[in-house]
Length: 310
Image (cartoon, rainbow, N blue to C red; front, side):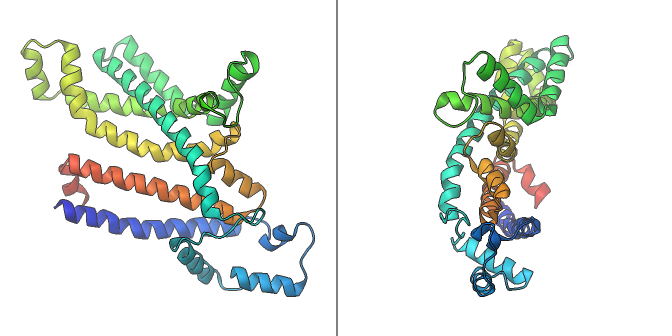
C-alpha cells in the first residue's frame, strides 16, 4: 500500500512540475523588453547579428518549441547564462540559494517555536482571556504586510537604536531582522493550527483516561495531547517551509539580502530573463520537493492518509 502511494505521488510530481515550467516560461516571455537589445545595451544590434543571436538562443522558433527546448535544457542541467554577466545561471542560483535557505530555516525555527509555545499556552487555558489574546495576536501576525513590518524593524533597531545592521549579509547580526520579519507573518498560522490540532486530541477518550489516573494537566498535555498532535503540526511546519521561501522574495528585497528572491527582483529590473526563469524554477523545484517529502512522511506516520488520498 505504501509503495503504491509513493509511486502515485511521485508520478503526480512530474506533470505538476511541467505545468509550473510552462506557467513560469509564459510569464517570463510576457515581460516587456528584448533580451537581445539588453545584451547590446541601448544600441540595437545589426540585423545579421540579431538573426544569428535569435537562431543561437532559439528565439526564432515558435513559442511551444522554445518551451520544449528550454525544458529539455533545464532537465539536462544546462540552465543557460546571465545576459549581463555571462555567469552560468545554475551556479548563480545555487550560490544565492545558500543565503535564502539560511533565512528560511532561521525564520521557520522562530515561527515554529513561537507558534507551538503559544498554542500550548492557549490549550492550557482554553476559552480564557489569554486564549483570546493569543488568537488576536496570531491573526495580527499573519495579517501584517511583510514589507511594512520589515521597515518598522529597520527603523527601530537599525536607525534609532543602532543595535543591528539595516540589511545585507554579514553574519548572525544581519540575519536577525529579516528572519524576525519573515517569522512574524508565519507564527500565527502555526499557532492557530497547532491549537486546533491539540484541542481535537484533547477531547479523545485516552486523554480523559490519563487525566483520571491522577496525572497533572501539564503532563497530560505534554505526554498525550502534544505527542498525538505532533503529526499534524509537523506536516504544517513542513508545508510552511515553501511559503516562507516564497515570502523571502519580499523580505530579501526590503533588507537587501543576497538570496534567490533578491536575485529574481534584480533580474526583472535588469530584464535578465534567463536569471528570472532560473531563479523561479529553482525555488519551485525546492518547494515542490519539500512538499512531496512532507506528504510522504505524513502518509507513513498516519496510514489513514494513504486511504483518503490515493
